[in-house]
Image (cartoon, rainbow, N blue to C red):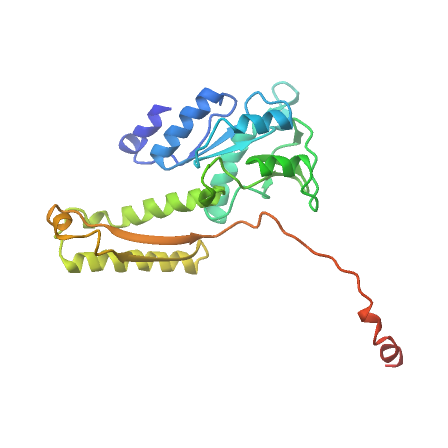
Length: 278
């Protein structure tokens, strides 16, 4: 896994979507999450060895990193070599689907509720109901475990990551932070070791604001701003060649819980006579 850290210098690419399908034991998952933090990537992990809902929920307590999502159970598909049904690791499908969503929709959309290709079943029973959160799927989601459902095909169900910080409760909250950090930094590499004068600071701020406006107009974020804090950029910092630019943003939340409130009424009978005589 450490080789992933050298990918950019050796190959010119930085791995972002990480997983070790079928081999992500707790020890491996822990190390992979550390690598994900270094790369500003995201790891998709199985609840390794867990056979029940309760075991999967208990397994989740081993992690606290925002850079990971825990998935249980696995998919089933037909293995042409074995000529029989076999386990199709959900984490492997998650890696491919994540790349597909990034390409077709964007990194602001979570993995949840998107059809998965090439699978025929689930490796364990998961009770799910669209209108009732008091189910296996609801319990898993409440405990930050993404599960699998069958509804118009097979789907991942759940958008939460393993973060212990509520500000990064959802997969796309973490990935939004990562994409913004890399996009803004890389777009302003030209400024590093440039002449530190007010016009340079102004150009950087205007460039960041322009990028943030573009992301907002495309629906990737709700809003954002950028500014220079005078209290941080004092004469000693500037003299040392240090310039600090602040920016904030609001990510797009996923609709995790759609509540439809039903009421019965007789008010639509009040104009019965007028409708009948019309």
